[in-house]
Each structure stands twice: as structure tokens, then as C-alpha cells.
Amino acid sequence: MALELERLRGTMAEGFAALGGRLDNALQRTSQTEADIDKLEQRIELLERARWPLPSVAALVALVGLGLSLYQLAAR
Image (cartoon, rainbow, N blue to C red; front, side, top):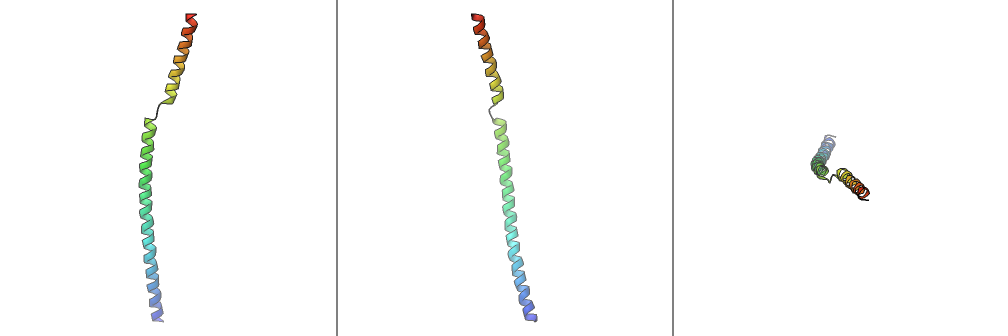
């Protein structure tokens, strides 16, 4: 009986050691994934700040078009 209990303890210890190794590996991957996500968020913020100001350009083009139309009307 004592021998079987000792074998069972050994098996349990091996199982817990393997499980601990897997958890450490998962924690490392999670940390790396979080770091990658942070880097991507920083890149997205930079892209958003540097994007072309399309609404401002559209408003400027509309004003130039209006000005040219008024000029043509006045020239007639």
C-alpha cells in the first residue's frame, strides 16, 4: 500500500510539474501578445495622427469651386 501511494505521489508530482510548465509557457505567450498589441496600438495612433485631412481638403476644394463659379458669373 505504501509503495502504491508513493507511485501515486510521483505521478501527481510529474503531472503538476508538466502543468506548471504549460502554464508558464501560456503566461509567456500572453505577455508577448500583450506587448505586440501595445506596439500595434501605437502604430495605429501614429497613422491616425498622420492621415491626410480629407474633410479639410474637401471643404477647400468646394470653396475654390464656388469662387470660380462666382467669377465666371461675374465675367459674363
